Length: 243
Image (tube, rainbow, N blue to C red; front, side, top):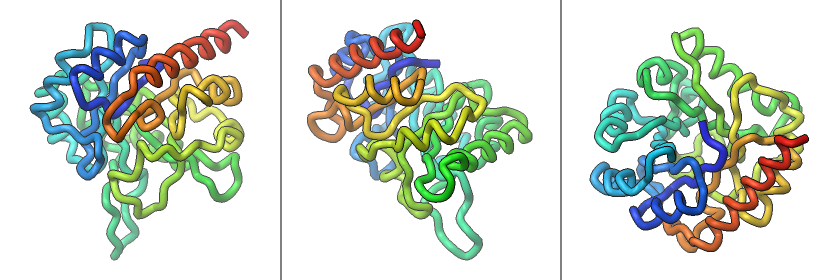
């Protein structure tokens, strides 16, 4: 679906700059509480500045599928990324947000990217088991996601706004040990221009995603950091493909 995604873009100027730098996907955040969260009106302005051929991806967490679809239609999104928890809250407890497996079916035909957190406890080989279970349940419900996005771990009760864009780095060794989840995978979690090439070389990732790693402030992309990130990511991806 994409090779290099710059997420949490909040202005039309930044959208044009990100596309000009060579990113092939732009993420628009609709998660309440995030410093990168957009209103529908603001998102329309950002999306209108993204040139054809660059994928417009909306990021949601815990939102009802019908509401996400309405925003996707109003803004002109090409794909939806569900970033909420993989599991519902235990009975009798509260969980700020979760996205059940049925959401893939309920937002059809828009492609779904399912964000998941790499577990930091237990055997490394099981670090993506929760994601595998979610994907299997989504397929059983009628439709699987088109792609997984692996981010750094977060506590089970973490609020929606703290599930991504935190700058926490994924444990690359655990990512590799977890094995192939059976879907195209994008690597996120603490990626910057300084480490993205090493991350791709270490993990074999075929797509990468960053938000805070190219910012001068939350929601404000730094042109120098964006350009360096895209150049190094594309170079590392090309080198990996040649092996």
